[in-house]
Image (cartoon, rainbow, N blue to C red; front, side):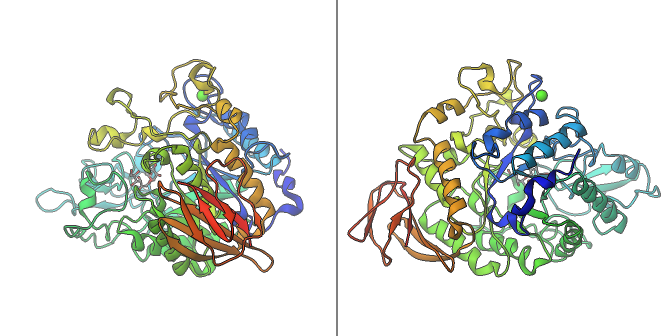
Length: 556
Ligand code: TEU
Ligand code: CA
């Protein structure tokens, strides 16, 4: 296949990822092309025009991040990889993948893969060999440790998905570390052979034409080599992640099992390989749960000085809490910490409660969702839209029988797991399974209240609001690269400016259930608010009137 990067010609700039709008696809749930109940790569190809047809049609997305589709026993739906350089037969073949890259590039959509390099599947050949004895060629590729004299695990570390982070292997009479499931053994990043093997994985996909990686759990690679116990969390302090209170892990500060200061060296190692390819990018998932400022600071640490990640995203906006003050604090503190780094924002993903449900979007709930999406697209930093936000996908109240997610299975009913935010994309209200496939029962029920055809037929839908805003972004450089400055925070309204040499834009949002009228310190010359937006602000006599969950964008 010809070099599909030619499609970008002169439009290819070194920091394309700073002005790009990303869209996360969960391939298992996007589109099922062969009607086996599971979304696949051909399904993604079939639906690329929805994202961007290359001729001004579709939403206008610039890049897709695809959750993992590598061979996997699916213990954690692809985040347990048994072969890093192939495609799981559920999802297709390497030929399908090449076609996907070609078809995406043809439409000027860049392709970002999700690399899970902290751990592999326990069915990976490396681990199968490693676990057999203490002398094989992969013996040190995972994190092995002797039991305590009483036979217990080496320390008190707990796994995110329940129980000890250690599982005993009788063949070696040792425990191995797994920060997630026992089926997801942590790789030993301190071993240089492991690093080289992972570097080869990175090059394999770079050579196949991908434009960047999302790095799963990029703050977990290093662990404390003395294996010290994690300290107990002081009473009264809370983990940041919504819904994790019932998880025993949140009773600990995980300073020894992850977030190690030396982890940045492994990131530097990866960055050198990423720099082997022109215009390559990376987004690390840096999910510290040690409070808001700590997580933002940690995220910033990973992206400064041009030798770490290109971008990092934290869990700050994946919170349950959302109001003008919280939003302003997250954005302001990030701006303060990030220096020469570049921010990256997302409001939801495949691990957290859908935004509409999480923020308890009141009254006309799409109003709040649309305001949040427009804010996401107005901030300094790269926005990531999660599939389905254009059709206001809500959290599905999963039943015990329908559960698929190992986290939900383990902690039910205290933590209901992540299936509710991973439903099949609703393409067509009139078709079987909302057009996800042609009738075979999907892996999770197809049950969103709104479908794409309905959203397209309704002029004030989130679909039209996003599409219009992406056009506005393209023609207003201050929205892409302008500096950020907070203007005011009052009455649950947040007002800020984005400014380049040639353009100043004013952005305002009302997080409250009441209308607000704000005296602006700047004169707005032109209203640029997307016309599809129902809850939009307006200017009269130098006052901005903002309806409940209203948004305003204007040229100063
Ligand atoms: O998530 C990392 C992570 O910390 C989350 O698992 C989070 O703590 C949890 O979902 C709380 O609900 C990444 C992936 O995004 C996730 O899908 C994987 O399960 C996990 O890593 C393991 O690879
Ligand atoms: Ca399929």
